[in-house]
Length: 453
Image (cartoon, rainbow, N blue to C red; front, side, top):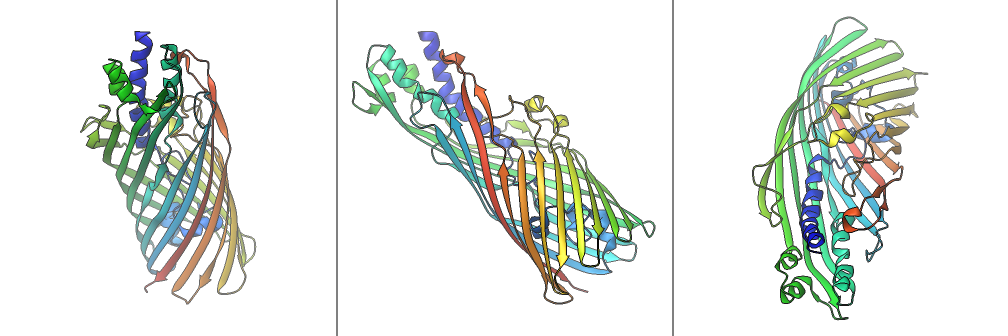
Protein backbone atom coordinates (compact mmCIF):
# COMPACT_ATOMS: atom_id res chain seq x y z
CA UNK A 1 0.00 0.00 0.00
CA UNK A 2 2.83 2.42 0.82
CA UNK A 3 4.35 1.99 -2.67
CA UNK A 4 1.03 2.92 -4.29
CA UNK A 5 0.61 5.97 -2.03
CA UNK A 6 4.13 7.20 -2.76
CA UNK A 7 3.57 7.06 -6.51
CA UNK A 8 0.29 8.87 -6.06
CA UNK A 9 1.98 11.67 -4.18
CA UNK A 10 4.51 12.20 -6.93
CA UNK A 11 1.88 12.26 -9.67
CA UNK A 12 -0.20 15.02 -8.11
CA UNK A 13 2.82 17.31 -8.09
CA UNK A 14 4.51 16.20 -11.29
CA UNK A 15 1.46 15.95 -13.56
CA UNK A 16 0.63 19.58 -12.80
CA UNK A 17 4.16 20.80 -13.43
CA UNK A 18 4.97 18.63 -16.43
CA UNK A 19 1.78 19.67 -18.20
CA UNK A 20 2.79 23.29 -17.71
CA UNK A 21 6.25 22.52 -19.11
CA UNK A 22 4.64 21.36 -22.35
CA UNK A 23 3.54 24.95 -22.99
CA UNK A 24 7.14 25.84 -23.79
CA UNK A 25 6.78 23.99 -27.11
CA UNK A 26 3.18 24.95 -27.74
CA UNK A 27 1.96 27.40 -30.37
CA UNK A 28 -1.50 28.92 -30.21
CA UNK A 29 -1.50 28.79 -33.98
CA UNK A 30 -4.52 28.97 -36.24
CA UNK A 31 -2.62 28.11 -39.44
CA UNK A 32 0.86 26.71 -39.82
CA UNK A 33 3.06 24.05 -38.25
CA UNK A 34 3.38 22.89 -34.68
CA UNK A 35 5.48 25.92 -33.77
CA UNK A 36 4.93 28.32 -36.67
CA UNK A 37 2.18 30.82 -37.54
CA UNK A 38 1.53 31.19 -41.26
CA UNK A 39 -1.43 33.56 -40.80
CA UNK A 40 0.64 36.70 -41.27
CA UNK A 41 -1.59 39.21 -43.11
CA UNK A 42 -5.17 40.25 -43.75
CA UNK A 43 -4.65 39.16 -47.36
CA UNK A 44 -3.93 35.65 -46.07
CA UNK A 45 -7.28 35.35 -44.28
CA UNK A 46 -9.26 36.43 -47.31
CA UNK A 47 -7.45 34.01 -49.66
CA UNK A 48 -5.37 31.44 -47.66
CA UNK A 49 -2.88 30.94 -50.50
CA UNK A 50 -0.15 33.62 -50.56
CA UNK A 51 3.07 31.72 -51.38
CA UNK A 52 3.36 33.37 -54.81
CA UNK A 53 2.37 36.82 -53.55
CA UNK A 54 3.74 39.89 -55.33
CA UNK A 55 1.98 42.34 -52.99
CA UNK A 56 3.53 43.84 -49.84
CA UNK A 57 2.72 40.76 -47.71
CA UNK A 58 5.31 38.99 -49.89
CA UNK A 59 7.77 40.32 -47.28
CA UNK A 60 6.76 37.20 -45.34
CA UNK A 61 5.34 34.79 -47.94
CA UNK A 62 7.49 35.34 -51.04
CA UNK A 63 10.15 38.01 -50.41
CA UNK A 64 11.83 37.48 -53.80
CA UNK A 65 8.47 38.40 -55.38
CA UNK A 66 8.77 41.98 -54.06
CA UNK A 67 10.66 42.77 -57.26
CA UNK A 68 7.28 42.71 -59.03
CA UNK A 69 6.24 45.88 -57.18
CA UNK A 70 6.55 49.25 -58.83
CA UNK A 71 9.36 51.47 -57.57
CA UNK A 72 8.54 53.20 -54.31
CA UNK A 73 8.30 52.95 -50.53
CA UNK A 74 5.45 50.80 -49.14
CA UNK A 75 4.02 50.35 -45.64
CA UNK A 76 1.51 47.78 -44.42
CA UNK A 77 -0.16 47.16 -41.07
CA UNK A 78 -2.75 44.51 -40.27
CA UNK A 79 -4.31 43.03 -37.18
CA UNK A 80 -6.06 39.75 -36.55
CA UNK A 81 -8.46 38.76 -33.80
CA UNK A 82 -8.81 35.04 -33.29
CA UNK A 83 -10.78 32.68 -31.07
CA UNK A 84 -10.24 28.98 -30.55
CA UNK A 85 -12.12 26.45 -28.44
CA UNK A 86 -10.29 23.27 -27.47
CA UNK A 87 -12.33 20.36 -26.16
CA UNK A 88 -10.83 17.35 -24.37
CA UNK A 89 -13.00 14.33 -23.55
CA UNK A 90 -11.57 11.82 -21.08
CA UNK A 91 -13.30 8.54 -20.20
CA UNK A 92 -11.50 7.99 -16.88
CA UNK A 93 -14.42 6.66 -14.75
CA UNK A 94 -13.57 8.39 -11.45
CA UNK A 95 -13.76 11.95 -12.83
CA UNK A 96 -16.71 14.10 -11.74
CA UNK A 97 -16.97 15.45 -15.29
CA UNK A 98 -15.43 14.10 -18.46
CA UNK A 99 -15.35 17.15 -20.76
CA UNK A 100 -12.77 19.90 -20.40
CA UNK A 101 -12.77 23.11 -22.42
CA UNK A 102 -9.92 25.50 -23.05
CA UNK A 103 -10.48 28.92 -24.59
CA UNK A 104 -7.73 30.57 -26.59
CA UNK A 105 -8.16 34.28 -27.25
CA UNK A 106 -5.94 36.40 -29.49
CA UNK A 107 -7.37 39.94 -29.43
CA UNK A 108 -4.30 41.55 -31.02
CA UNK A 109 -2.12 39.80 -33.61
CA UNK A 110 -0.33 42.57 -35.53
CA UNK A 111 1.83 42.35 -38.63
CA UNK A 112 3.91 45.27 -39.94
CA UNK A 113 5.76 45.30 -43.26
CA UNK A 114 7.78 47.93 -45.11
CA UNK A 115 9.49 47.78 -48.50
CA UNK A 116 11.72 50.18 -50.38
CA UNK A 117 11.96 49.07 -54.00
CA UNK A 118 14.10 50.79 -56.61
CA UNK A 119 14.80 49.25 -60.02
CA UNK A 120 16.60 45.94 -59.42
CA UNK A 121 16.83 46.10 -55.60
CA UNK A 122 14.31 45.96 -52.76
CA UNK A 123 14.99 46.24 -49.03
CA UNK A 124 12.27 44.84 -46.80
CA UNK A 125 11.43 44.66 -43.08
CA UNK A 126 8.74 42.73 -41.25
CA UNK A 127 7.62 42.42 -37.64
CA UNK A 128 4.97 39.94 -36.47
CA UNK A 129 4.38 36.99 -34.11
CA UNK A 130 6.15 34.08 -35.77
CA UNK A 131 4.63 31.69 -33.22
CA UNK A 132 2.12 31.94 -30.42
CA UNK A 133 0.39 35.25 -29.86
CA UNK A 134 -2.46 34.11 -27.62
CA UNK A 135 -3.60 33.17 -24.13
CA UNK A 136 -5.12 29.80 -23.26
CA UNK A 137 -7.44 29.58 -20.26
CA UNK A 138 -8.48 26.28 -18.69
CA UNK A 139 -10.89 27.29 -15.95
CA UNK A 140 -11.30 23.68 -14.77
CA UNK A 141 -7.76 22.52 -15.40
CA UNK A 142 -7.04 19.42 -17.48
CA UNK A 143 -7.65 15.66 -17.15
CA UNK A 144 -3.95 15.03 -16.54
CA UNK A 145 -4.24 17.12 -13.35
CA UNK A 146 -7.56 15.81 -12.09
CA UNK A 147 -7.32 12.07 -12.75
CA UNK A 148 -4.81 11.78 -9.92
CA UNK A 149 -7.07 13.64 -7.50
CA UNK A 150 -10.11 11.66 -8.65
CA UNK A 151 -8.52 8.50 -7.23
CA UNK A 152 -8.61 9.85 -3.66
CA UNK A 153 -12.15 8.63 -2.77
CA UNK A 154 -11.41 5.09 -3.95
CA UNK A 155 -8.08 5.02 -2.13
CA UNK A 156 -9.56 6.27 1.16
CA UNK A 157 -12.50 3.87 0.86
CA UNK A 158 -10.00 1.03 0.44
CA UNK A 159 -8.45 2.16 3.74
CA UNK A 160 -11.83 1.46 5.46
CA UNK A 161 -13.35 4.97 5.44
CA UNK A 162 -16.30 5.28 3.01
CA UNK A 163 -15.61 8.19 0.65
CA UNK A 164 -17.66 8.85 -2.48
CA UNK A 165 -16.76 12.27 -3.86
CA UNK A 166 -14.16 15.02 -4.25
CA UNK A 167 -13.97 18.66 -5.33
CA UNK A 168 -11.00 20.75 -6.42
CA UNK A 169 -10.25 24.25 -7.67
CA UNK A 170 -7.93 23.97 -10.69
CA UNK A 171 -7.07 26.86 -12.96
CA UNK A 172 -4.45 27.25 -15.65
CA UNK A 173 -3.56 30.22 -17.86
CA UNK A 174 -0.76 30.18 -20.40
CA UNK A 175 0.42 32.71 -22.96
CA UNK A 176 3.01 32.37 -25.69
CA UNK A 177 4.41 34.79 -28.26
CA UNK A 178 7.49 34.51 -30.44
CA UNK A 179 8.15 37.92 -31.99
CA UNK A 180 9.93 37.83 -35.34
CA UNK A 181 11.78 40.82 -36.80
CA UNK A 182 12.81 40.13 -40.41
CA UNK A 183 15.25 42.10 -42.58
CA UNK A 184 16.48 41.24 -46.05
CA UNK A 185 17.19 42.25 -49.64
CA UNK A 186 15.66 41.14 -52.94
CA UNK A 187 17.48 41.47 -56.26
CA UNK A 188 16.28 41.13 -59.85
CA UNK A 189 18.80 39.17 -61.92
CA UNK A 190 16.81 38.96 -65.16
CA UNK A 191 13.37 39.99 -66.36
CA UNK A 192 12.09 36.62 -65.12
CA UNK A 193 14.17 35.71 -62.07
CA UNK A 194 14.73 37.44 -58.74
CA UNK A 195 16.12 36.21 -55.42
CA UNK A 196 16.05 37.10 -51.72
CA UNK A 197 18.40 36.66 -48.78
CA UNK A 198 17.65 37.73 -45.23
CA UNK A 199 17.15 36.68 -41.64
CA UNK A 200 14.55 36.82 -38.88
CA UNK A 201 15.41 37.55 -35.26
CA UNK A 202 13.17 35.65 -32.84
CA UNK A 203 12.42 36.83 -29.31
CA UNK A 204 10.27 34.25 -27.51
CA UNK A 205 8.23 34.81 -24.35
CA UNK A 206 6.13 32.15 -22.61
CA UNK A 207 4.29 32.93 -19.40
CA UNK A 208 2.21 30.45 -17.50
CA UNK A 209 0.67 30.23 -14.11
CA UNK A 210 -1.77 27.91 -12.47
CA UNK A 211 -2.93 26.46 -9.22
CA UNK A 212 -4.46 23.40 -7.64
CA UNK A 213 -6.33 24.64 -4.57
CA UNK A 214 -8.76 23.27 -2.01
CA UNK A 215 -8.72 19.55 -2.74
CA UNK A 216 -11.72 18.29 -0.74
CA UNK A 217 -13.06 14.80 -0.02
CA UNK A 218 -16.12 13.52 1.86
CA UNK A 219 -15.03 10.77 4.27
CA UNK A 220 -18.11 9.35 5.98
CA UNK A 221 -20.25 11.75 3.91
CA UNK A 222 -18.81 15.04 5.22
CA UNK A 223 -16.65 17.26 3.00
CA UNK A 224 -13.33 18.44 4.37
CA UNK A 225 -9.93 19.49 3.03
CA UNK A 226 -7.91 16.48 1.96
CA UNK A 227 -4.76 17.91 3.51
CA UNK A 228 -6.57 18.29 6.87
CA UNK A 229 -7.85 14.71 6.65
CA UNK A 230 -4.38 13.28 6.01
CA UNK A 231 -2.83 15.48 8.71
CA UNK A 232 -5.36 14.17 11.25
CA UNK A 233 -4.69 10.64 10.02
CA UNK A 234 -0.95 11.07 10.64
CA UNK A 235 -0.04 10.82 6.96
CA UNK A 236 2.32 13.76 6.22
CA UNK A 237 3.15 12.47 2.70
CA UNK A 238 -0.43 12.80 1.46
CA UNK A 239 -1.04 15.92 3.56
CA UNK A 240 1.78 17.61 1.63
CA UNK A 241 0.81 16.27 -1.78
CA UNK A 242 -2.81 17.44 -1.43
CA UNK A 243 -1.90 20.90 -0.15
CA UNK A 244 -2.40 23.92 -2.41
CA UNK A 245 0.07 24.20 -5.29
CA UNK A 246 0.92 27.28 -7.35
CA UNK A 247 3.20 27.95 -10.30
CA UNK A 248 4.14 31.32 -11.84
CA UNK A 249 6.89 31.05 -14.45
CA UNK A 250 8.16 33.07 -17.41
CA UNK A 251 10.41 31.70 -20.15
CA UNK A 252 12.42 33.73 -22.65
CA UNK A 253 14.85 32.96 -25.45
CA UNK A 254 16.23 34.27 -28.74
CA UNK A 255 17.22 32.76 -32.08
CA UNK A 256 18.06 33.58 -35.71
CA UNK A 257 16.28 32.22 -38.81
CA UNK A 258 18.21 32.55 -42.12
CA UNK A 259 15.83 32.86 -45.10
CA UNK A 260 16.35 32.39 -48.86
CA UNK A 261 13.86 32.88 -51.68
CA UNK A 262 13.47 32.78 -55.46
CA UNK A 263 10.73 34.21 -57.67
CA UNK A 264 10.16 33.21 -61.31
CA UNK A 265 7.75 35.19 -63.48
CA UNK A 266 6.40 34.48 -66.97
CA UNK A 267 3.82 37.15 -67.73
CA UNK A 268 0.60 35.56 -66.38
CA UNK A 269 2.42 32.90 -64.35
CA UNK A 270 4.30 33.61 -61.12
CA UNK A 271 6.19 31.07 -59.00
CA UNK A 272 7.48 31.76 -55.49
CA UNK A 273 9.88 29.56 -53.51
CA UNK A 274 11.05 30.21 -49.95
CA UNK A 275 13.23 28.25 -47.53
CA UNK A 276 13.52 29.10 -43.84
CA UNK A 277 16.37 27.36 -42.02
CA UNK A 278 15.87 25.76 -38.62
CA UNK A 279 15.93 28.22 -35.74
CA UNK A 280 17.89 26.92 -32.77
CA UNK A 281 16.02 28.19 -29.74
CA UNK A 282 16.44 27.61 -26.01
CA UNK A 283 14.02 29.01 -23.44
CA UNK A 284 15.21 29.85 -19.93
CA UNK A 285 13.04 29.83 -16.80
CA UNK A 286 12.46 33.01 -14.83
CA UNK A 287 10.65 31.51 -11.85
CA UNK A 288 8.57 33.66 -9.49
CA UNK A 289 6.66 30.91 -7.71
CA UNK A 290 7.15 27.16 -7.93
CA UNK A 291 5.49 25.10 -5.22
CA UNK A 292 6.05 21.91 -7.21
CA UNK A 293 9.87 22.02 -7.29
CA UNK A 294 9.77 21.30 -11.03
CA UNK A 295 10.73 24.77 -12.38
CA UNK A 296 14.21 25.67 -11.12
CA UNK A 297 15.08 29.25 -11.91
CA UNK A 298 17.49 29.38 -14.86
CA UNK A 299 16.66 25.91 -16.24
CA UNK A 300 16.55 25.73 -20.06
CA UNK A 301 14.22 23.98 -22.52
CA UNK A 302 15.03 23.25 -26.19
CA UNK A 303 12.29 24.70 -28.44
CA UNK A 304 13.65 24.82 -31.99
CA UNK A 305 11.49 26.32 -34.76
CA UNK A 306 11.58 23.77 -37.61
CA UNK A 307 12.90 24.56 -41.08
CA UNK A 308 10.20 25.29 -43.67
CA UNK A 309 10.07 25.14 -47.46
CA UNK A 310 7.16 26.67 -49.37
CA UNK A 311 6.20 26.73 -53.03
CA UNK A 312 3.47 28.86 -54.54
CA UNK A 313 2.08 29.26 -58.04
CA UNK A 314 -0.23 32.08 -59.15
CA UNK A 315 -1.84 32.30 -62.59
CA UNK A 316 -3.88 35.15 -64.08
CA UNK A 317 -6.69 33.38 -65.92
CA UNK A 318 -7.93 36.76 -67.13
CA UNK A 319 -7.02 40.36 -66.31
CA UNK A 320 -9.59 40.25 -63.48
CA UNK A 321 -9.42 36.63 -62.34
CA UNK A 322 -6.42 35.02 -60.61
CA UNK A 323 -5.91 31.56 -59.10
CA UNK A 324 -3.20 30.52 -56.63
CA UNK A 325 -2.02 27.26 -55.09
CA UNK A 326 0.65 26.60 -52.48
CA UNK A 327 2.37 23.90 -50.46
CA UNK A 328 4.36 24.16 -47.21
CA UNK A 329 6.53 21.46 -45.68
CA UNK A 330 7.65 21.73 -42.02
CA UNK A 331 10.74 19.72 -41.05
CA UNK A 332 9.48 18.90 -37.54
CA UNK A 333 11.44 15.65 -37.21
CA UNK A 334 14.74 17.57 -37.37
CA UNK A 335 13.86 20.00 -34.57
CA UNK A 336 15.09 19.61 -31.00
CA UNK A 337 12.17 19.65 -28.55
CA UNK A 338 13.92 17.95 -25.65
CA UNK A 339 12.98 14.52 -26.98
CA UNK A 340 9.35 15.07 -27.97
CA UNK A 341 10.38 15.09 -31.65
CA UNK A 342 10.80 11.32 -31.42
CA UNK A 343 6.99 11.06 -31.48
CA UNK A 344 6.80 12.75 -34.90
CA UNK A 345 6.04 10.08 -37.49
CA UNK A 346 5.88 12.38 -40.51
CA UNK A 347 6.59 16.05 -41.09
CA UNK A 348 3.56 18.35 -41.25
CA UNK A 349 2.56 19.70 -44.66
CA UNK A 350 -0.07 22.15 -45.89
CA UNK A 351 -1.89 22.50 -49.21
CA UNK A 352 -3.71 25.69 -50.17
CA UNK A 353 -5.67 27.20 -53.03
CA UNK A 354 -7.27 30.59 -53.52
CA UNK A 355 -9.15 32.73 -56.03
CA UNK A 356 -9.29 36.51 -56.53
CA UNK A 357 -11.74 38.42 -58.73
CA UNK A 358 -11.77 42.14 -59.52
CA UNK A 359 -15.41 43.21 -59.32
CA UNK A 360 -14.41 46.74 -60.34
CA UNK A 361 -11.33 48.96 -60.45
CA UNK A 362 -11.66 49.54 -56.70
CA UNK A 363 -13.20 46.32 -55.35
CA UNK A 364 -11.76 42.79 -55.29
CA UNK A 365 -13.24 39.69 -53.66
CA UNK A 366 -11.45 36.46 -52.81
CA UNK A 367 -11.77 33.10 -51.10
CA UNK A 368 -9.59 30.12 -50.34
CA UNK A 369 -9.05 26.75 -48.73
CA UNK A 370 -6.16 25.41 -46.65
CA UNK A 371 -5.55 21.83 -45.48
CA UNK A 372 -2.99 21.03 -42.78
CA UNK A 373 -1.95 17.39 -42.43
CA UNK A 374 -0.32 16.61 -39.11
CA UNK A 375 2.24 13.83 -38.75
CA UNK A 376 2.50 13.39 -35.00
CA UNK A 377 2.31 9.96 -33.41
CA UNK A 378 0.21 8.87 -30.44
CA UNK A 379 3.02 9.44 -27.98
CA UNK A 380 3.07 13.14 -28.87
CA UNK A 381 -0.53 13.97 -28.05
CA UNK A 382 -1.39 15.35 -24.60
CA UNK A 383 -4.42 17.16 -23.26
CA UNK A 384 -2.58 20.50 -23.38
CA UNK A 385 -0.40 20.05 -26.46
CA UNK A 386 -1.85 18.15 -29.38
CA UNK A 387 -1.52 18.56 -33.13
CA UNK A 388 -4.58 17.95 -35.31
CA UNK A 389 -5.14 17.98 -39.05
CA UNK A 390 -7.14 21.00 -40.16
CA UNK A 391 -9.50 22.17 -42.89
CA UNK A 392 -9.79 25.95 -43.17
CA UNK A 393 -11.84 28.21 -45.40
CA UNK A 394 -11.43 31.96 -45.79
CA UNK A 395 -13.03 34.81 -47.67
CA UNK A 396 -12.91 38.59 -47.85
CA UNK A 397 -12.03 41.48 -50.08
CA UNK A 398 -9.92 44.48 -50.95
CA UNK A 399 -10.91 48.10 -51.46
CA UNK A 400 -8.67 50.63 -53.16
CA UNK A 401 -9.41 53.93 -51.47
CA UNK A 402 -6.94 55.73 -53.73
CA UNK A 403 -3.88 55.04 -55.84
CA UNK A 404 -1.81 55.00 -52.66
CA UNK A 405 -4.19 53.58 -50.04
CA UNK A 406 -5.63 50.02 -49.98
CA UNK A 407 -7.76 48.25 -47.38
CA UNK A 408 -8.00 44.46 -46.93
CA UNK A 409 -10.38 42.48 -44.75
CA UNK A 410 -10.88 38.76 -44.30
CA UNK A 411 -12.38 36.04 -42.16
CA UNK A 412 -11.33 32.41 -41.79
CA UNK A 413 -12.88 29.42 -40.09
CA UNK A 414 -11.00 26.23 -39.21
CA UNK A 415 -12.43 22.81 -38.38
CA UNK A 416 -9.99 20.32 -36.89
CA UNK A 417 -10.01 16.57 -37.43
CA UNK A 418 -10.81 14.88 -34.11
CA UNK A 419 -8.13 12.54 -32.77
CA UNK A 420 -7.97 10.25 -29.76
CA UNK A 421 -5.59 7.98 -27.94
CA UNK A 422 -5.68 5.46 -25.11
CA UNK A 423 -4.18 6.79 -21.86
CA UNK A 424 -2.32 4.20 -19.79
CA UNK A 425 -3.45 4.14 -16.15
CA UNK A 426 -1.72 0.88 -15.21
CA UNK A 427 0.33 2.71 -12.55
CA UNK A 428 -2.96 3.21 -10.71
CA UNK A 429 -3.96 -0.41 -11.16
CA UNK A 430 -6.50 0.52 -13.84
CA UNK A 431 -6.84 -0.23 -17.56
CA UNK A 432 -6.35 2.35 -20.34
CA UNK A 433 -9.11 4.84 -21.11
CA UNK A 434 -9.75 6.92 -24.22
CA UNK A 435 -9.01 10.64 -24.43
CA UNK A 436 -10.36 12.65 -27.39
CA UNK A 437 -9.14 16.00 -28.77
CA UNK A 438 -11.06 18.52 -30.85
CA UNK A 439 -10.84 22.24 -31.78
CA UNK A 440 -12.60 24.95 -33.76
CA UNK A 441 -11.15 28.37 -34.65
CA UNK A 442 -12.47 31.63 -36.04
CA UNK A 443 -10.31 34.57 -37.11
CA UNK A 444 -10.99 38.10 -38.37
CA UNK A 445 -8.42 40.40 -39.96
CA UNK A 446 -8.18 43.90 -41.34
CA UNK A 447 -5.20 45.58 -42.96
CA UNK A 448 -4.13 48.89 -44.41
CA UNK A 449 -1.46 49.38 -47.08
CA UNK A 450 0.00 52.72 -48.13
CA UNK A 451 2.52 53.74 -50.78
CA UNK A 452 4.39 56.81 -49.61
CA UNK A 453 5.99 57.56 -52.99
